[in-house]
Length: 306
Ligand code: TUI
Image (tube, rainbow, N blue to C red; front, side, top):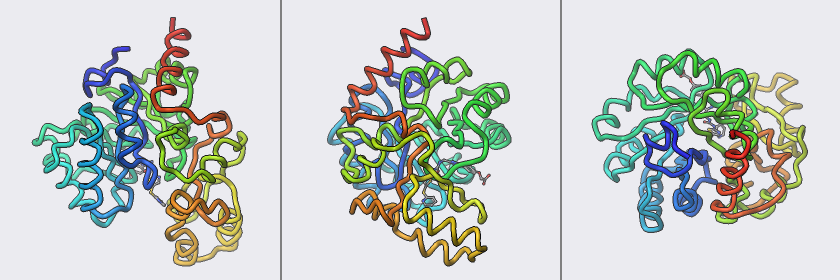
């Protein structure tokens, strides 16, 4: 299936894997790229040296295009931005901020730059700054989110900019893919579905929680201090929301979440870890390889779009 995004990125299918912190490491990224989508290494809060190693390991597993996601709150974001250029990565996505200060360097290096935006205003600003496309991410997504839903954000961003728009948030099958195309998107980005890919190194306990999740099993923590994060309900979210409701200071809340994503992904702590996942987790029932997933989604979508 050809779209402006498959052309822009040199990939077979317009499916991008979300650059999830801790989750999106080189095995997953390489598997998605090998399957014809765009695999992405999620730099998350990792040091620049670790990101460089991840890039090099991905190159050993695939010769197809792949990307790196820069989480802009990372204290080493400046160094990571340079590592991406030095390693000749072809696509960069960004999250949780405005990547403006890196654009000139990345564009000069011939890198395709695709920021995640959660509003029309940022999408417009990014287009003016010269990015190649934007990912419009709705609040159905897991992790750090904005406040507009995918259904409302995607068509409004599509109307506001001329560059291609990639839809994210709440998409995990061919129906969601087809709906995104109907809203004017040129590709989709999926996160939660790839967390449970066979090639994903995420702890079995975390995967089981996603596979068992129902439609209303996620909570949004951190709204009171401007960093809303969607994750599956557990002991951690119950504690957090109780404290947040009581007006606990940011430092106390932050203490609760420190290292909690790692705890969930690496140690499989589903009680006190942060099980970031989108609202579509309730629909995901089976672990599959990335290639199986992408084939299934494309077949279903192409049938529907006809
Ligand atoms: O970035 C994400 N999702 C993430 S980042 C992350 S790491 C983390 N871990 C623990 C606590 C908090 C974060 C986990 N999930 N998605 C992309 C995204 N970007 N969603 C929303 C935004 C966004 C928000 C505001 C992008 C730009 C923005 O603009 C602010 C500005 O400066 O204009």
